[in-house]
Length: 392
Image 1 (cartoon, rainbow, N blue to C red):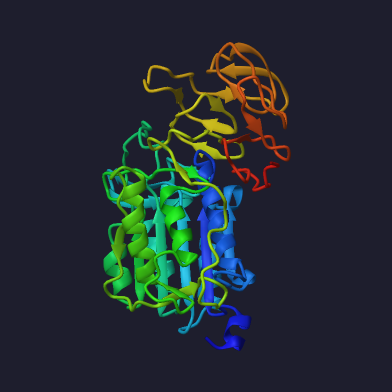
Image 2: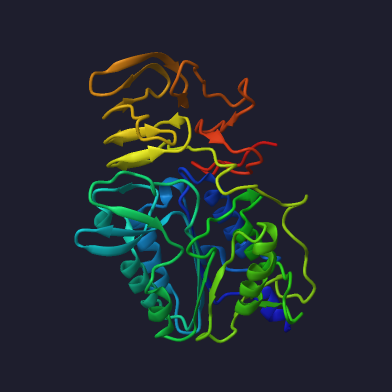
């Protein structure tokens, strides 16, 4: 490979990397890890300004659509574009028909058509990208979420990708699509990354490449994910690959333009959770969810409208209103303002016990971000809410 080409970096590369956070804190760490890999001059060597990273509160509907529009303007037919979304994806049946939605950080269950991103809208934005080399990576079948919400008139089912994605993206040629799991499977989180994103990062480091010429290609990444994700999840997660209509184009450098891989960007043996959702710490601080909402962990915060339930049974419902103070005060539940008692700190557990927000471990060993006070998942390198690095 020419020395000047290596020094220039992979200048044709553009990327949008989205991790919605909230009840999926691992999606933020996955997104940050993947974006860091793409921008690393010693590895993928994308131009940093051409990698759009949206996480947590920054992963709203308008931010995501705006970033896709920005790539459509900045990329050209010779560009290589990677779009990665990690969050909830649902097939929604309503009296007016069936629709697919990607859920951003903030959404309204009663107005999904305006607050979420429909599959058709997402595909239209992708089709507007002029690049002849486009890879779409979707990690949309996570545990938890609102799949069991009792939204009036709606039936929700987790779904790995919009049903029209394959056929419509294939119309333009040069388009490849990889989803993290099959229709009836859930994605496994892990440390430092989920099973799916770990496979992507490994491939982008040159693991399993077919040619030692400095480039990682679409088939390298897709086939590596198809091989190692089922191995690490006990055969319970199988990525979906669609790149029949695409050339096996180069996605990036794997060693900054050199032929010899430089290893993985982390130390230690990766770990994958034993069951989907087993390592998730629910954190809805800063997230606003309107409409009926069922939470899957004992920490509730943020703004809620509509019935709120905790636990596996719907009868564990706390009424129409939950009020949680920012620092200290009282917790009120239900229309009758039934008081549960004094609560201190920003993470409040419903029940008799109290919890406080500090930058030190609680009695239960839980850590909180020193910057914004959000709960931290064990082993986290970044805060899922604000993205602040976690002190070792």
